[in-house]
Amino acid sequence: MAKDPSMTGEVYYPAPEVVHGAHIPNYDKVHQEALADLPGFWGKIAAENFEWYKPWKQVLDDSNAPFYKWFVDAKTNIIHNALDRHMRTAIRNKAALIFEGEPGDLRIYTYQRLNREVCKFASVLRAMGVRKGDRVTIYMGRIPELMIAMLACAKVGAIHSVVYGGFSTEALLGRIEDSESKLLITCDGAWLRGEIVKLKEIANAAVDRAGTIENVICVKRTGQPVEMVSGRDHWYHEMMALPIASTKAETEVMDAEDPLFILYTSGTTGKPKAILHTHGGYMVGTATTLKWTFDLKPEDVWWCAADPGWITGHSYIVYAPLINGATSIMYEGAPTFPYPDRWWQIVEKYGVTILYTAPTAIRGLMRFGESWPNRYDLSSLRLLGSVGEPINPEAWKWYHRVIGKEKCPVMDTWWQTETGHFMITPLPSVPLKPGSATRAFPGVEVDVVDEEGHSVGPNEEGFLVIKRPWPGMLRTLYRDPDRYVEAYWSRYAEQGWYLPGDSARRDEDGYIWVIGRIDDVIKVSGYRLGTAEIESALVSHPAVAEAAVIGVPDELRGNHINAYCILRQGFEASEKLKHDLKDHVGHEMGPIAKPTEVFIVNSLPKTRSGKIMRRVLRAQALGQDVGDVSTLEDS
Ligand code: WT7
Image (cartoon, rainbow, N blue to C red; front, side):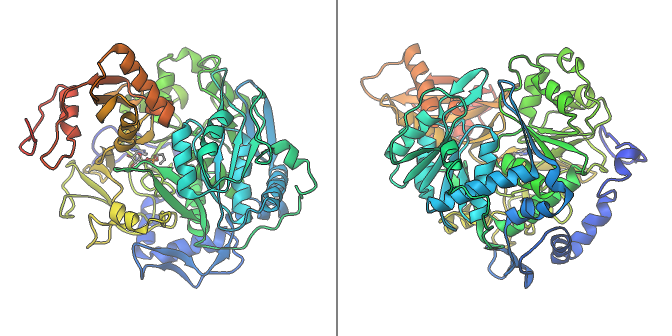
């Protein structure tokens, strides 16, 4: 692409062969057209690329905003587009999923085989009484059965709620109870760095206390003895061998707006938010963003190295690749097991053409130096991707140079659990700036504004807002519509804009630079953690009277957590206690939430109304000026 001398900063231009033949070689034109007629834009895409049992009456209904509806009155099922329709074409013989286990085992599912497994498991679910609208919690490692379970739920119209396999008992229990799931699908264990994460044991502890679960289905993965409760727990492989596991299973006819899944994510206050996504709009949004952003072609081997337990995995391991008829890689374990070349070995072995991962993983692998990737032939790669947090230019350049050999554009995709799919991202034809997610996806209208909603000037920091609805947007928080309105639509209620909760800058060229969260959400290794949740975990320890946690910049993980605790009477500070508190948080929430440092203090900085001023703690930890503390109760 021709250089534009007026552009500022360091710019990487795509090679002509990248632009030529890309699905969208002309970003500006497509974006302008989309904004000029949003329903027309998405309506055309939805009609041409997806099958519907019944067409819509209206593409977008905004009469009851912010409760938007997309593809009003249309009937479909995301599974019809992800699997059923492929059975009629050559795609049925193509590899849908190439799975490599951490111990080195390999499984390949063609579309036909995957569909068969999904049909059988859907029949099992129906035989166990799972019906449209029922909630099913899934708590598993990164194995094909996790995908099969999700797809089977969608097929029968049940709402899946996947809980990340790195979460502990309390987190699992809270999510089971909040969603009132009657079935839990889990596995005996998961392989991680050569060791077994005992998922069934954690699941048992949660299910014993959860009132709603009637049945548990357990996949055998690691094979160690586990406790199975008779009458309640069933082995997956035994169920799948029964006559009830019929390969003839109807796909439930769903309204475009019927719920597909809920996925919990951390918010500013209290308990996690249950983000709700639907069949129609989510399907159109995820599949289209993947196809355009990563220029997905039939011959590609797509590897999204995230966990299916997060939105990245839901959208870009499970649903969007299947809808596009793509071949995906799934790898079970750690990137550094047994050696730090495992990922590069996988790229070479399966001829991966597109790799999508997170800055924290890139930084982690960068530490081991270039010799590990250099031992492999990575020439199959043609595009790279990043997601989860701002990518520091140094990591971007390493990724681009060492992994992409300076020929693979890096797609830095900004989005959220709530948005369902990419919102700010380059397309392969867009010139890149390391560290910037560049510009909005076609049809997405973003801005950076001040408190009053005025666009801020170039390079000034402000709040990121999204000014118009998009098809994959969350529809509500499950059973909590008031919190939905309050959390996302109240700050700019008058204008009707969505507030993602991020701060950002826009440069002279209109490029967006996301800075970070504006609320009490901390990103650790790309995972989103709420200060409130970690603080409640700390306070649930008998020694802790009060606690505050902050995120501190960390070279590897983006942020790590520091905790400040006031002890109850009768307890004394000791190294052992600090250690116990870290373990306690790990036990309550999962290892990812463990504080790196625990400080025992006599008081916490609070406003006169009693709110903890984490800003003050953060400034102190970083040795910065604490700023205006006039509202502090006792400065
Ligand atoms: C938050 C959403 C979207 C899937 C994974 C995270 C941050 C995400 C980027 C990016 C800068 C990013 C934001 C956002 N974030 N991608 N490319 N550049 N920041 O989903 O757990 O819902 O977190 O992650 O702060 O609000 P999530």
